[in-house]
Image (tube, rainbow, N blue to C red; front, side, top):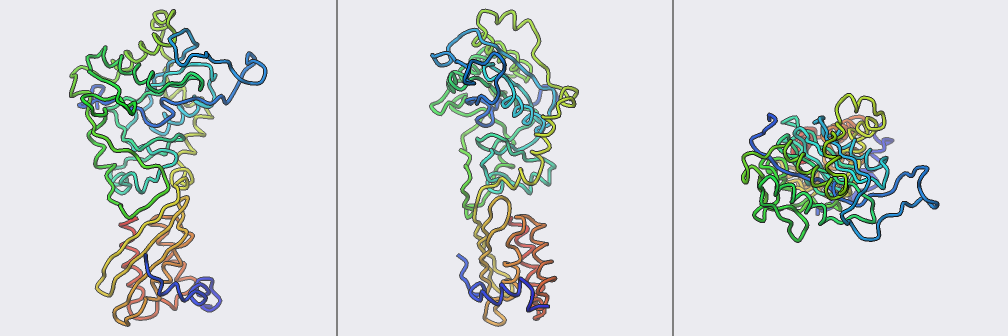
Length: 397
């Protein structure tokens, strides 16, 4: 059995693997403003057209960028606080609304960490702490950095035709709304909204976004860390509702100038659970965002180097991963009792390849050894060494 197993073939045909060197209530105590990712203030692709679209499928936009005018506008305020649902609805809006329409979408999420489409969650957030506290991480369909959400911050999304998009104009719009609420906000050179040169943000972000993994090298997009503050430090009266009202007013003034008062007298489109229940496309996007294939399988390629000393010897390991799967393991382990590399640990490294980059993947690697090459665990202490390393890696991954 042993000599015919795929794992034994790897052990027998690649001896170099053995000795290879390892190289709130409605008025929460704090209130923050947040836009998370490029979709919130970004260009807008023209995914769909209607019968009134000119020949050729392109909608003619104003030649001058983002001028005050009278355009078709829609404003949405969500009463749903589930982060998967709000981000799925935002994605649906982006892909299915009339691309000539100017859209404002305002929402709050329950506690969650949001990562960008091309980011590495193992590098960006403390996944173990999130799991311990029952807080999900959500991978957006758009780019951008990693942010922390809870009911103490309001998120805004502005969508408009690609040709007229101007990031600074839209953040200045938000600044004007904050000025109406007596918040001395301004826009810095990176087009961040700041108060006293600090980005507006939350105090809880530190514990969930603090990850000490300097030896994890990823091809993903890294978040830019900035000094942060809370709006409540500048105003005791600002809350979610007042910010939404002020922002909606400024949005209508900017993009529906002649009719903004009339529009303001009307109600925004309310996104509630009943509305979501009737939108199969939104639910499909939400369900997809919860899958392992999207949450972890979208993770860009990375490598992670680790080292640990055990009573029986020292282990150096380099794990390479892509799309959530372990693609290569270089495991250098010196067994001091025999002054030679440990064959059981070499088998573990080979067994890890092809598994998911998580605790379950490590367990399956052990099962693979037991099924395909149990003899390598027979030497005294072999099985214990494997379990020691597996427990250690589960803490580190």
